[in-house]
Image (cartoon, rainbow, N blue to C red):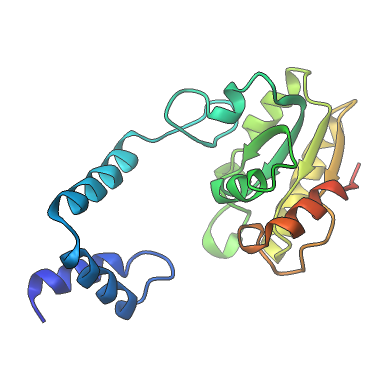
Length: 198
């Protein structure tokens, strides 16, 4: 195999869910693409990686200080949906059923991977709640062992927040499933039928 091809396959196979076979197919496909299209693709990836920011209010991906959701004055600012990753925000937004704000933790508590509560954006969530506008926190965290641990930890931290209702999304999503991979109807059903934790 050409060293150049082998290098591209090696880099592409670093992506999640992309094995060497798929990486090889992608690399061969790129050879068939117009040079300008490949240049535009690599420029977009480079710009994304170098210029993307995190919203100062919710930790979602943003091109500016505030993400589009936080900057939208039509959103319900009394409700915040806490999720693990940016991909969870996208999944919930695709349902077009939720009109509140989000808070992206940036992962879940996982001692096995060396991720503790201080590695997540939990303090930012508490700072936002302390401003007094938020009346409900929806915990939309995966039902994995790590997700349940994270949810329990956040629920305990929110116990001192007077006047704030804490709920979880309904268990339309099966135990062990991740929100990112659930279909839109299941997510919409889970959001509408959330249950109170506090």
